[in-house]
Length: 350
Image 1 (spheres, rainbow, N blue to C red):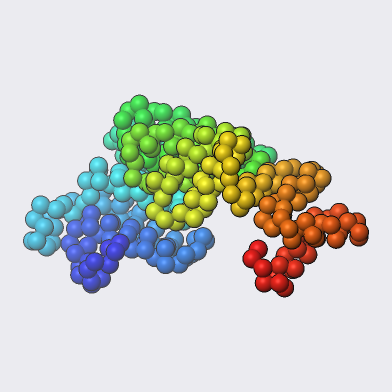
Image 2 (image 1 turned 90 degrees about the vertical axis):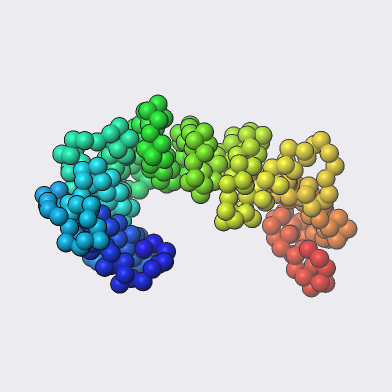
């Protein structure tokens, strides 16, 4: 169903012959439709389909009897409890993904009534519960108010505890579910003034997924990428390089240019004072130093940017500097702009 490997009418007919197939078909069709819409808002169509699947799962627990089609003589017309629990969990997670809290809450209620839930499934239920709590809280607050950030950090701490339980119990599916939920919770906090507060949870998440050789490669790559940024901001170049190396190994090509550029620049910073570098590399390192400077240090920026100009075009840039002494130009950005215009007009390489 997901990859359209069979004709739709054949899949539909097969799904009608077995309730388990029907649930799989409807859930997968819903996922496909959600991806086609490519919208981050809940539509009436998606809402109706969610409720239809939920009703199918609830009603299936009340139906008994033999199947109508003889092709599946051993398939029950109702869904066994263990399968129904698994489907309710999947539906709850899907409901939260499309922001339908009502269906997610109904799934959670049914799961609690089911009774026969293993430790891994119970942990995933807690993930659903944490996400519902956060959605309810943030609905009453501004996205980045102090209260909203603290509420998110509180749920992140809860998930961190559940991750430890999942690892201790050896519930691999629950481990991955908690990690993905944790990553989604951390995403809004990946800003310059907030990301340090989620460094520890991200480190634990990355290590757990690495230890179990998880196949959620995209999440693992992005976690290491963000950790590299955090370590670089804290001045730990070696740790940042380690995270970038891991991200490069996990990347499917989506972040290739960004990762390669960041890795090369960090290597240059590490060896800048140890080995002689070509002018372009030295200029790149100096430009990064300018980016790292606080906004109020304009004087320091000017001297570094002058050094960049002299490295890239020593003779031409020095000529411009000498000429601008007469007009007392102190704005380095205006100076560089004029220099770029001169280079462009003379068709000289920048």
